[in-house]
Amino acid sequence: MSSIRRITALFLACTALLGLSFASAAAQPKAGHLDEVLRKMDAASLRFQAAEATFQWDLYEKVVKQTTSQNGTIYFKKDGAKTVMGARIISPTTRILEYRDGVLRLYDPGTDHLTVVTSKGNQAQMESFLTLGFGGSGKDLAKAWNISDLGEETINGTETVKLDLVPKDPAIRNNCTHMTIWVDVERGISLKQSFYMPSEDYRTAVYSNIKYNQGVDTKPYQIKTDNKTTVDQH
Image (cartoon, rainbow, N blue to C red; front, side, top):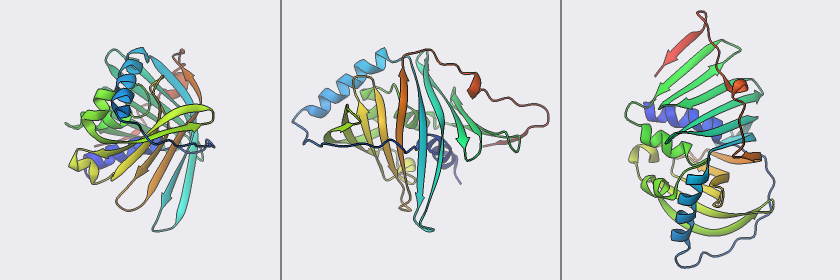
């Protein structure tokens, strides 16, 4: 498996989430609507400092026709011009995931094993997935994706803009044919994500109980290792 595929798989294993019920009322996009959306995302990105949410994620695998689920909590936090992400999966088993400075770390406390994935020149691709969640600007979105405006939908009382994204990078298209995201453009938060793979497997993501621009207690997300921890680097 290539490094970018590992990056994609590991990151989306954390961010592909499902569980928030929603009622939608779609509207056809107006002329110039996408430009307005991207401008609002630029403005929201400047205001964004941090967010924390609970999640449940659901992966459907076509070959076995089976769906697997996990849930936990996740946070995104601005660190200067960069974004730091941490997640704690609590069910069915505990795992901790951290993204910082172009390095993705996944820790399994049960086996005391740490997997480390470095961007190796693919940091832009990794960041393009990361900023889909929280705090990404419209300009950055347009750099990494070909965007289609699918109109507006209301999710649990929050107005969102529905965007379909096709990766510009051929390496990413090998793993992701396209994504659909539902964005609260005023806060720069993606409330729902659907990620489609060439295998016809798919992941769907929704965040709930969102704490926006509040302090984040990062202690539950800390990865604690010792000299007995086994490490796998990619």
